[in-house]
Image 1 (cartoon, rainbow, N blue to C red):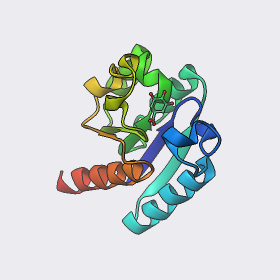
Image 2: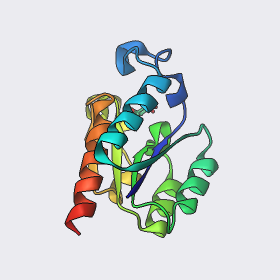
Image 3: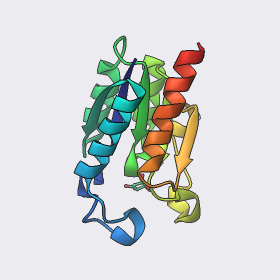
Image 4: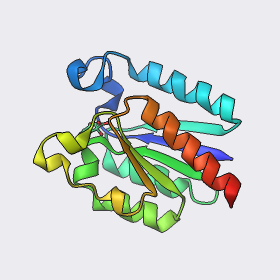
Length: 145
Ligand code: DQA
């Protein structure tokens, strides 16, 4: 079972960017938590972050045939990107959308998510734990099928 964790723009700035919204833990610490959890679950893991929409599209396309589940925090591209939605639809890999903050309680422009139409679950406002919950879900869904 291989999981791909994808992070969009500015998530590499965790720990620095708006700590009152995203907390003070760093992107490196997020990656450590994800890797440790993957080891517990017995999952292979790849973690990728990009500030560029096309890079994220390329990564989703490259996952076709080799990845069993995608955890995606598209960050600001959540609210703008039809391309990411289309890429997920194209590869057909089960996916869960994660947001560190509770986007449902934030600005109006954050209420739209294009990838949500495809994702099996959306987890918001659970901080870094949301990624681990998404991994649990994808592993469970895979084991049932
Ligand atoms: C975010 C929420 C988005 O609205 C924002 O653009 C981000 C991070 C989150 O994880 O809470 O960059 O996806």
